[in-house]
Image (tube, rainbow, N blue to C red; front, side, top):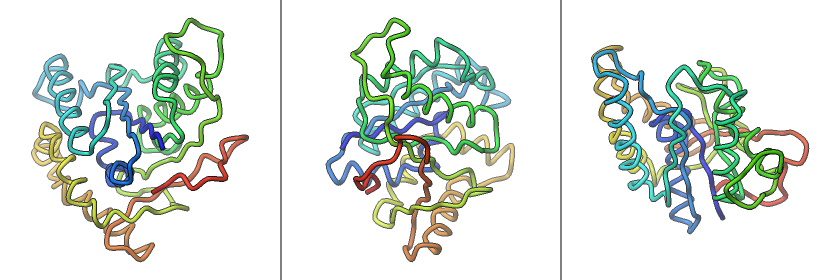
Amino acid sequence: MIVLAVGCHPDDLEIACSGTLRKYVEQGADVFMCHVANGCHGHVVIEPGPLAEIRAKEAEAAGAIIGAKQVFNLNVNDMEVDSHDPAVMDAMADVVRFVRPDVIITHNDDDYMQDHTETSRIATNGSFCSGLNHRPRQYDAFSSFVPVFFMDTLAGVNFQPTHYVDITDQIDIKLRALRCHESQLTWMAEHDGIDFADMVRTCSKYRGYQCGASYAEGFRPYNVYQRYSARPLLP
């Protein structure tokens, strides 16, 4: 099994699906992580350039804890993520061609901010473009119809899962990976008064209550033409 998880900002995957990604790794899957945005505006004190460098290192550290084989960074500035940008779409298509995933996990297509919804479109449309020859590419063409699962929204707002993954045995690693994003956890505590690690644990426990597990993550499939699969794709 080869899994590609596409998040917008560094830490989005850790928040929404890192327990599942770790479970994939423990079951022998190859997991790849990709961040579209560089997180350069995720602070009100640290300047964008230095912050993007900090967050890239935090993402690499988190990926290592999860056991990801590689962490990609498309390096788009925050609030500039645009699914109509041909360069970004081509970059995403080449990530898919390189990874050749059995399944993609990405943001819900209706989320709380533009960067996230645009990333969802970049992941789905980029995977479609991976099978086309209309632009120069670095790697051989790949299937245009990779099955996609949308991951939970922040705090589960406006999201009703149809599938759950029991992450009871992975919750501690999920939180360890999340805590690698120290710049964000510190900023959110100071700026918003939120203990973000506690929030993520609480949301995982809430999803667990829904499916009879101590902790869980919720997903729903991208149900469109040929994105279905007869195989079980979640761990």
